Image (cartoon, rainbow, N blue to C red; front, side, top):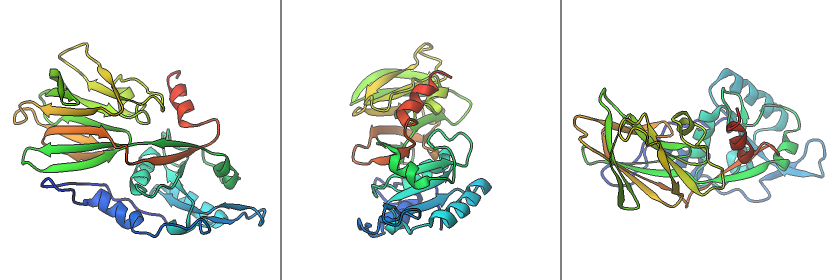
Length: 303
């Protein structure tokens, strides 16, 4: 049976209260007992003497993904999450992000197969030799961004973003942002449609569309990218150390309202947003050998 992943919401009144994203993920994943090494392995169907990882399949609601879920579950079995050694996610990049958020804290690798559209984070779909593909896969470990947004009413909202955290104007007028890095003001006023901070894994998404740089996965940097900057007109952004804390201060928020977005989880009417890499959280992604995230990021720059 596939897991469902509600869209997350977060912290209020300055306290870390589990909202739909993190509470739901905790209920689905975090509350389950940790699998024993024995339960994570099962005999290979073709060679009973060979042990292979037990697979938990999960799929988006798309018809292609649901059909793949039925076929793969019938062929390979669908282990309960508590007994699995690997999760196979069937869908597109959006569903992969939901799956990674739901798996937070479980330290289990996730292997995606594309049954969606873009599929940058997914492997090609095939029903053949899945155990062999999993055993030979390359693992990439990534850390998400932690966003803490302060709203006009004083409430605090926390969310995690695997790709990027973005600030966007809510109305017809341009946003005015002041940028602080590690407590030091680096830009007094950026007039723009918005700005974002992207991880290397997310640098080919919204960041690249906004003319930000593609970052190698092991570069230990973050991309700070302006979205349609008006003043300074030629300022595109900056490369920051991965450990840096970025703080956006919204200027004149009453007349120029701004929203914050962390992997499509939105908070409106923000006045201040702090962003920092969450080094204490890691996500494990599996890719077919020769098609790892490093190769994909490099290839994306030559298309």
